Amino acid sequence: MTKEELKTTLKKDLDGLPGIQGVNNHMGSLLTTKAESMTWVMEVLQGRSLFFIDSLTSPKSVAEKIAKEHGLKTVTRDVFLDNIRTEQAIDKQFSRLIKLARRHGSALAIGHPYPETTSYLKKRLESLEQDGVVLVPLSRILLTPDLTASSNK
Image 1 (cartoon, rainbow, N blue to C red):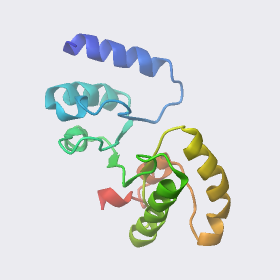
Image 2 (cartoon, helix red, strand yellow; image 1 turned 180 degrees about the vertical axis):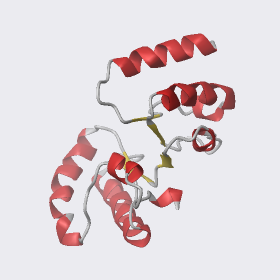
Image 3 (spheres, one colour; image 1 turned 90 degrees about the horizontal axis):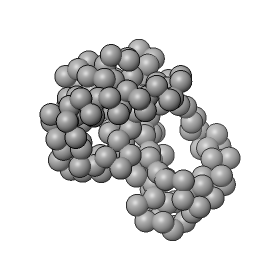
Image 4 (tube, helix red, strand yellow; image 1 turned 30 degrees about the horizontal axis):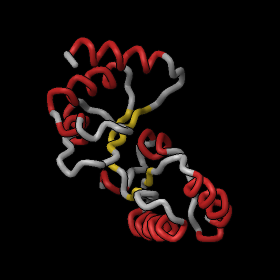
């Protein structure tokens, strides 16, 4: 994609999402490794004051670095819940998420709307309060000056 094609497509997609506060690179692992393309993405996001979440699905991602260079609020995920689509694996990742949140004050998980994931979350989210954990939108963490996501500390 050329610079103009990428920017035009992204702007059109964002226009279709009223109230949007940020974006994430779902299925964009390769793009996050390309500094020039990520610069174009961040220019569009900067113009709309949006934050960026890097799923960190590539170890070569430059997304967070480029986002910060453009002054965007940004964070990388701490835990990928459902790389393995079994309840046992998702539970292990969720437990890791809780430990990180307790240690750092917050933690970010990503996942897919797989039946295994949604079924697990429906059951598990009910007991979060008993664990002393509060689920909040990422926008609250990134856009509230006194709060920071764990990977931005």
